[in-house]
Image (cartoon, rainbow, N blue to C red):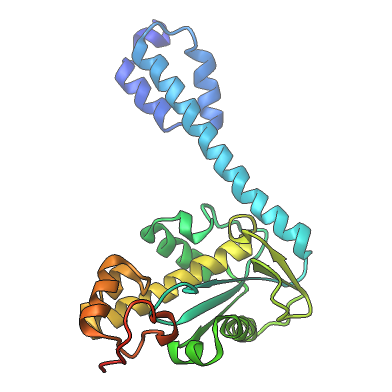
Length: 261
């Protein structure tokens, strides 16, 4: 009896759905003329799935290739920040050195990832990274020195906190003039592996801080808004005034009253 007669369509479709590329190519050749709609549908879906997976793999490998192209084969740090536009909480910067022979699949600009995916990737990054450095600039320092100076300070500290002497520092955004070996890449968090890693680590680290602050100041919805000016956060500021982790210099158009804590 032929394969078509021996294997029920439902069983065959389930096998095709979980096939690797090599397995799929063999089954596609074998069952290309199978008359059953369920089998042909499974073949089409499997090809789309595998092509999508290949595109994602190529995207990630391209991020590592650009890291090598711009940074070379030495110690390359990716640097990125989170919290620049928030009205509460710190500015956080992370610096990460990734090996190029152990890709973190799924790595991307942190803004393109769900919270659960960011957390899972952050754990993987911590496991494989050669070095990780983090720096926080608290609200009162941001108010005192301004965001530009705070960002430069945080980047220098994050690089120093890695404990390595980098051969190249790849920074997301415009030139910062904070390291003699820096190279800046606009939208680098979506283009270069180590910068994407830094964006993920910075985001996950700062989000955890804001959730902790939410327990101290629950009226401001910090666990949800992470310190950004959501409508609920703005309304809470207008009702309760400013708490110790608000950036006074960022809140002038929201409320004129001083801190109430």
